[in-house]
Image 1 (cartoon, helix red, strand yellow):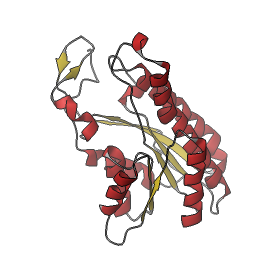
Image 2 (tube, one colour):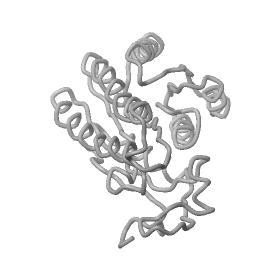
Image 3 (cartoon, one colour):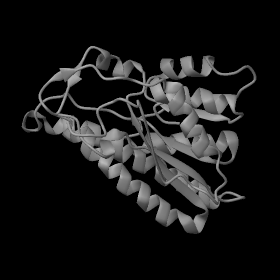
Image 4 (cartoon, one colour):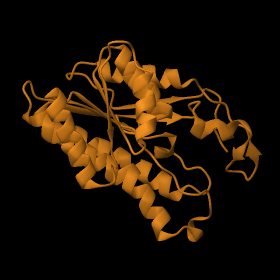
Length: 242
């Protein structure tokens, strides 16, 4: 579980823990990972491993720890994400662009690469990878070029993993999430920029609904796969003209 220290990552980690999974919590902030672990069920098994998923050495160390501790890997949730300041694309710096790409796209690739290596070699072989695509994998918000571009790219990565993983019994799907009630989306209740130039509040959904959706995807046998799922607040401005 990447991005396990807060928001969707924490909610999904706790749902998996409650369902009996051993969960490895990955993220950059050790104290946040420990808070997630402390909220787990009594007797559950949650391992916090501080990780910078944009760095190959850090990702390799994470998966080596997984292999050492548990001996196999059945599920990877590529959840971690980052955004750039909501400013005009022409005003973004190279560093701001690169930071988003490193986490959202390169990080997901590096984690999937290590997961595939483990899954194809273990006995019984195979496993499942779920990528967090976001509603931005379909449509952009104003001034969101780095985030939107990387989330569109995640869709291509998901399809590639699905195709290339078949021969190793590795399934890959994508969940596109819109307006889950987390710290990151709290600002939406006061109003966020819309495509028509206005600033309007947007509805949010309980993050536990997202956790249940991911848990369903994870619970399927490897002979079945949710290729793409969209879960969102019913009245958010996604369907229809902006």
